[in-house]
Image 1 (cartoon, rainbow, N blue to C red):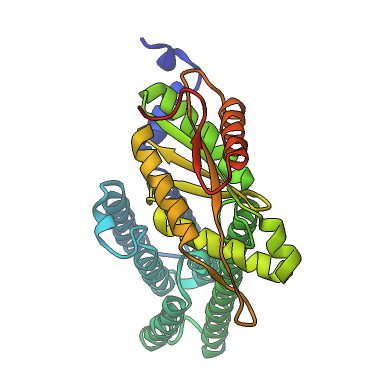
Image 2: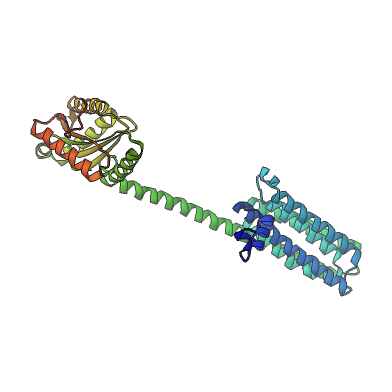
Length: 382
């Protein structure tokens, strides 16, 4: 015997798995079906109590109970076997409601003096429909129920006019109409609440996505921001350490950017940053990640890239920036150049260390005259 089998409750758990399966969706469908079956069995029991009290003849109740029980078994088998998954409603909610109402209508016909037990059973059946049917289906059930019970009451009055006064039959019909209308109203209210919750959930998801975008995107350039790049760096450094693939980090800084702001204003500086971001984005590959690090400084992450290929890519970026003057408001243009410091992640090296080396290479490029690419010592391609 396994330890799981020896644990208290193990047999009960296995029995539930056998009855309801382990599929969470199937368990919900089957649990609701079993609950509906138990309620119908209670109705059958009530009918047999009426038989015991001498209010109903036994033989029609026997046949009625057999038909009802057989229907419950068929519905359970269809859901438990998974066959019902072929249909639009795998839980067979509409089918169960329609057949249960037919059973209740039949009970009304044969119940004789015990017909009063039908109304609470009908109300319970409709409670299941309130949460499981669409408003259109519920309206169909309403019409179906009115016709079904109208015919049942008319049949009883025609076959047994002396057993039930017409006023009592009218009272039964009125209460059945009230129960059906109340169930339909509650279904529509429940559907409206579900739709409202669904819309609120969708709106919340959109708001969360907007917050996430604001937290990881630079509002001015639309590029990933420093926070996002730090997370990406840590992730890619760990990945490169495992795979032994080359990982390159470059820091890009616009040359003399302060002069652009001082001469043309901050609006022109913002446009220059946006234009620079667009130019670099067109030059890099889809697998590369370009982020705004702060001010006029950017960081470029190049995954699985040898240093020689990285040099060609960075030189392409440098030339493209120099060849793309920025049009400013008022028909003015300004030329931009960029200084780039690059480093290759060394075995066992962390994020801060490689960023510091790339930063030192960037300042070397600045000291050497700007508008150039400089590698950290020992990282330049041979």
